[in-house]
Length: 106
Image (tube, rainbow, N blue to C red; front, side, top):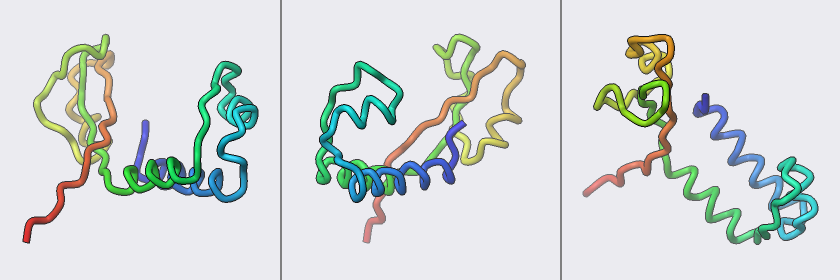
């Protein structure tokens, strides 16, 4: 399950990729993504745009049925632990949502 710590690691890894690797090298992407069909190219600018977006998000968790097709509660949970407590059956799934952080209105 994706956590805030995981998100920070992804943001840091993206910066490393932009700084130390060749972002546009599709062969490196195939190797590190363990996906031989990956042929997208990245630029430092696109990586920075993704990092900026990820930094502007916050995590929420939702509980769904076993198929992942129906939300079992209308509540979005701030922590994984509270989402786990809301499960009513062992087959219920917990989904991770990345939501934009609301901007403060002055």
